[in-house]
Length: 321
Ligand code: SF4
Image 1 (cartoon, rainbow, N blue to C red):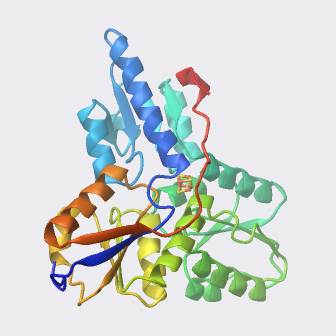
Image 2: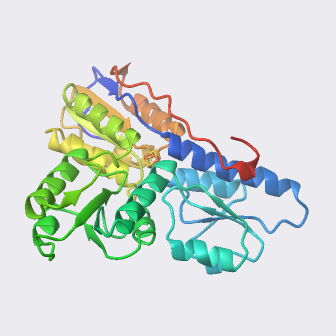
């Protein structure tokens, strides 16, 4: 890590940062399923379809505890407990699991499931649905596969401008939960201008955790010279945090862990801001801070911000609510 002086750094932490309620619930589901499977003689194991949340450390820790991660249901042996990740799955995946009689525990975040229901409702009203989101993301694949009829994926203002539908189409939109609030607002503004009969939940589909973390990193950008976002490269909400910080005019870097610090040039920064996405475990944040401390003296503080108290009940099949 270049650019740190011997006088050290002010390290300012964003509030909130790290795990959200949907991630806590999803990880808890896998751990409880593993504990239950351990007790059952001859149990074929616990399989998770897709990374339970987008973070390599979370996946590695659960793998060490006995969970197996697969991308397709064909890799799940008959009878094995099958967990759907927090991002949700399409109806086709759900139907395939049911056809095979797999015992499923659904770790889809309740806020993602809410978007599914909203999209289904709009489709039932006869509206053509637009999903504002990023192609290829697991949540988007799941949501696309949950809504009947015509669904169009729009990922940018340019795509909203070029969407090839008649201006009088009866439309509704839903959004991915982890988008940039500002980008989404811009996309919706274009859609509303082009299609007068458009309804939707504004940016309310973007979940509370995403909104709070983006507001916090914006506040961080007001006091920090450089911002580090701790999180995985395939995490949508971590990437959006880095973009929001960059749009606020601060050099910002996504770091997966302490090992990434060596490639970062702080450019003489005196105040370093640090945040973490909703899928980043606290232990990784602590490791990054400890690694910074080994390089330079730190004066650590936390910005005032929202104290979250959201929690989601576990599926009743795990015996807890
Ligand atoms: Fe749920 Fe939001 Fe967390 Fe995604 S980021 S798991 S939608 S609470």
